Image (cartoon, rainbow, N blue to C red; front, side):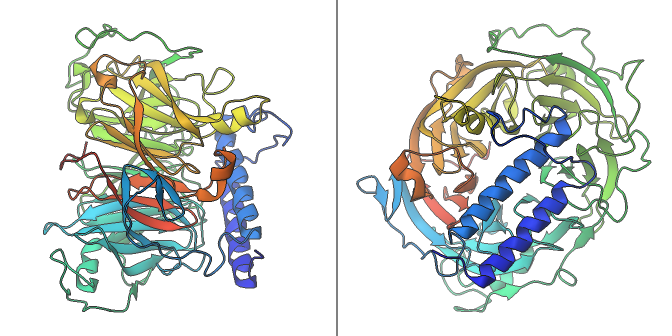
Length: 556
């Protein structure tokens, strides 16, 4: 199908914005050859890796635009349907029923292309989705039966962007985009309560049945617009400390976040391990004894010969105090290990007693799992950097991580976004999705202990774990639900991990048995008390799903 003029204009602008953002000072353009077996072989500098990834994805978007995959009217809303005979309409499935669906076009997007996703639950139990799109975010209410109601949208602050990310603290959404000058949007989600077409009981709400969706103003309806940085790739939060972590930021901010900030670059007190094969894990009852243990009040002090503080975040952690959502306040930066693509931030109560009560960040830093102690925002420490064999003996592109066991934090699952893609460029290379297992009971010496290989071919993107199930958004193979409950119970190699359910929102590659491309699922959100799972897919919109294995109200 030929793309329309409108679609071509919008997507061309989006592609140009992505390339402009990727050439911000903290990113250097890739010079890798398309004939190379790895798109990153010509990019030894860590900070150049993201530019290569962005270039690859931008090319993928251009190809989809040319093929008409973002054309108006291309996709229809799929009615709620049980999975029967392995199908829900055109979508393959197993143990997953479809409760609701909205296309990006139905959610007001002019670019009709999606990205990230997060959820919010009001104190009265009503559930809402914040659906990322290339031209903003859409707000959707998830009704008791799992059906979806589009309420309105918040446009992008500056330019369109392939990459947009959202997290929630309290009743505020914190939104970043990899678009020049975008900064941090802070939006009060209680504004949605008066817009509903149906409340938690399923009756007409204050907005009235059939109420017109509202487009919020980026000038008048934000609680705050923080401009200490411009473009940013990702955002993470620690609910307990009310801290927002901006990740992968450019130097295009109006205030110059981190410039001249005391201790802005932090220091390194890390162990570093390079691993070509998984290392054996000690038993849970007796983890390896860490060197020089320190009390919880004062864990590992900065080394006497620490690295010089940087004058910028280098695309690393930018830390904001969000206790007052109307005035996010810069408290520190950690740039000593460069670009951070994604992160998990916690007030730590895991197995390593030296760090109980400390603010610990698990960073996905392009080719390593990097662990920080950022309790002292003015002097953040790198505790460890650990790599693994994703491709040619190192991480291809360390993308995202989540614990298998919640606050216990004994083991992490880690996604690598380019291992499958790079293997696919090698003759006979295996492109089945691979997930890596890490034992992190010693924060100063994590171990890569195993890997899980999926039964289908695709690239993994984001995953979140609830009640022993990992909800993996694996691009072209959609959402794959994997039982990971055995990992923390004596199986650090991941041998007991197995797929128990799936919903594939990208049927286009089914005939070829899957592919290592960047199509389909971006994020699955499994944390609603109702058990409804949301899946945001790049081309076809947001899906509300029921996984038929039971669920509880846990959000670990």
